[in-house]
Amino acid sequence: MVKIGDITLDITQQNVAVERALAQTDNPRHRYLLQVYLRHRYLESAGRWEEILDPQLTVDVPHYRFSLAGRPHLELHGKEQVGALYKHWTDTDQAVFYVSDEQVAVGDHIVMGRGISWQQTIGSEIPADAGIDVDPQAMYLSKSAITMIWPYDDRGLLLGEDVWEFDPSVREYFELDPADVLTAEQAGELLAPYIEPIPAFDDTMLPR
Image (cartoon, rainbow, N blue to C red; front, side, top):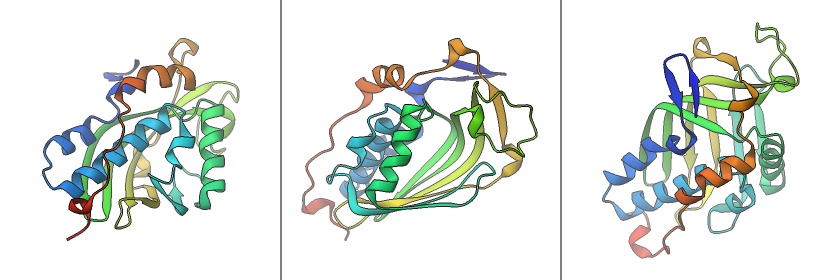
């Protein structure tokens, strides 16, 4: 766990809003989308990015669009480009995300999340105009207010991600004590008990 001011961040609690939405959802299709969404998010921070690209979770040519934390707009097309980003984050321990104040909604072809993201970010990758004196070798938490829209096809496969920072005024960077930095391996061990298999897809999960 990491304490930032009055906030305590626990990676095992990163998806409480998704779990809450799932517990309150009866529609079979919506439940299925929330379950695959949940699995994806846990796998990402656990460093198990290859499993995200499994044909049971993601279409052959996903399309990702990011506008985040003062960085240039980024678009990724296909599993090779998407996988390269996930691999980079995992190899540099930047796939570790904490989440707070999140709200989650689900529809027949979409899951949406809105809240505060805290991503481990190595100093050398913080934008030059961040307004802080950065140690390029240190690890930071990048705090940002983001909205995520993830579209899905009729069979519940992820089509891509649209993620953007909706309020730049929330953005902050906090240098982490080395003892508070989670490695991808440590995150994987902590999250392993939360990663569940997805149910078999059947006709009750098709959009009506």
